[in-house]
Length: 152
Image (cartoon, rainbow, N blue to C red):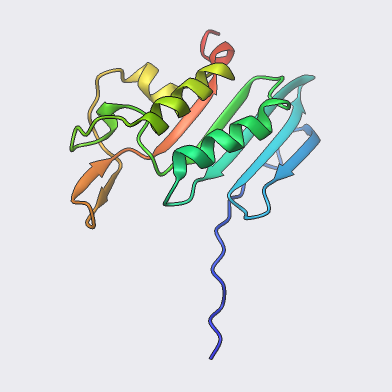
């Protein structure tokens, strides 16, 4: 008996009441990421939706950012399941943030993206997910946006 291959995927839904012009769509071949560049009321914006794999998420996210960086020429909102905490506050076990996560935060900074949750809640230690396997809570779902969007 053959097992069906499971495939992850992301989607971005937009109301049909919004008048926008689609400019670019980019997807990775595994279905983990989709980037949509659009114009709404003559203003370009980019939406990126990411579902990082369960293992190697920081490396995967850095790779996605590198590949998308040449297209991040407009205000950007990135949402998704990053499967990795971005700060020590995002883990109940208070484990140290390893070098991969530090490098990911550096990559986010290089492309001028910030964790909007941490801007709005700089010291909140509420968590979004409990892993029974690891017996820890962690916030692994994130909304990352351009620093220019946050300053307006």
